[in-house]
Length: 252
Image (cartoon, rainbow, N blue to C red; front, top):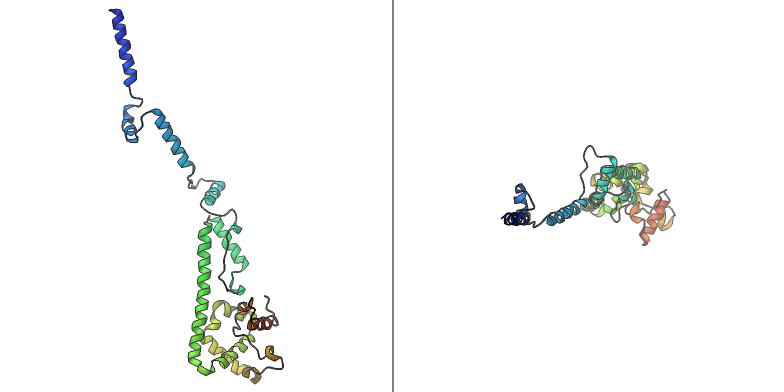
């Protein structure tokens, strides 16, 4: 009888070990929901979770060190230094309209310090530069049409007077006209014509050359306020215009 009782107890113990779950009752719902069949399944799931989180970027907090913040910026697309940002100016834009070097340096440093993404920086700034250039080009075209309609057959002669008057103005003033596009504003042009007629000599107003041939004093480039437009052209007008501006101190 003792042997039978002992045998029954061993059998019951074996059955208990075999059928007893490997998780506690409070975790039963999670195990069922995740479909885990064994502890090995749980470990595999945890390893996968670690792998997923290892590639994620940790947001910096107020307590984060400067190194941690910089690491976050670089993972989100900020270049390694301010020179990593690039500015692309619109094709045809003269150098005088480009941003001064000190302004470019300031903008790049500010973007770098705040972790601005390289693509976002370049896309935004280049779009701004292109938009400004497009506005100047459109302003020039609109101003030219308006003046032609108003002056009619006098357009070329009157414009020549305005250009020659501008030539007597300071370099700073002409640069301002070019940068702002005011040199193409009909109101400014008409004012230059009036002032030119009042102050310039008859020879200049009438456009008589003084023995300098085709490129003498009687020659004035069509776009007097835009020397950069003639920087690379190989046509006759561009060559003459470059010689004109270089003789007056412009550097190409």
